[in-house]
Length: 214
Image (cartoon, rainbow, N blue to C red; front, side, top):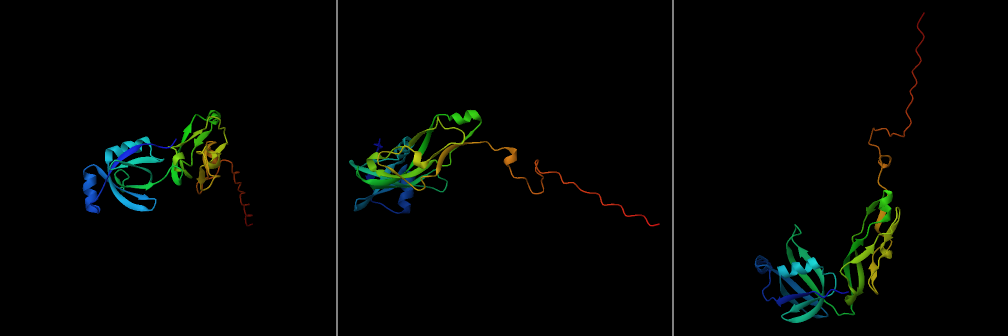
């Protein structure tokens, strides 16, 4: 299902980096709303409410109540400070339910692969993908059941259970998750100057002694 979380916002008249710093110091986050060829609107959000909504997941279409008027939007950009802890700014884009949008969606795994019983190791190279679909079909995450995954088997992007009408963008042959053999000592390259355990021993011939002069 699409995300229906609502976030309250108010229009913001004061702009600039100094004003934004004051807002963040007061527990507020500056934002902007644009799209559908309408004039962009500068907003201010409550930081606590935004963080609560982010913990619940905001990967689909959401509702932003701007001065009490509901707007259907998706988050297009979420800017953090250089440490990745403080939220600096949020970009919202207006959407309609049947409008096709692109979004990055996380991949969650479910179950324990049968291949682990045979000594395999679970490896997940891809943790999120970008998809295109109707805004109303955006989901919080893509759930992948890996219970029947055997040693040597893989699930690719093309195998993922995408939302109805959705299309994965990028390499559809990319491996999302697979069960691989654990590395062994024989798989590791020998260090320079180090003789491999399987390398045959070098046999040196002794130089024949020269005949003694008579």
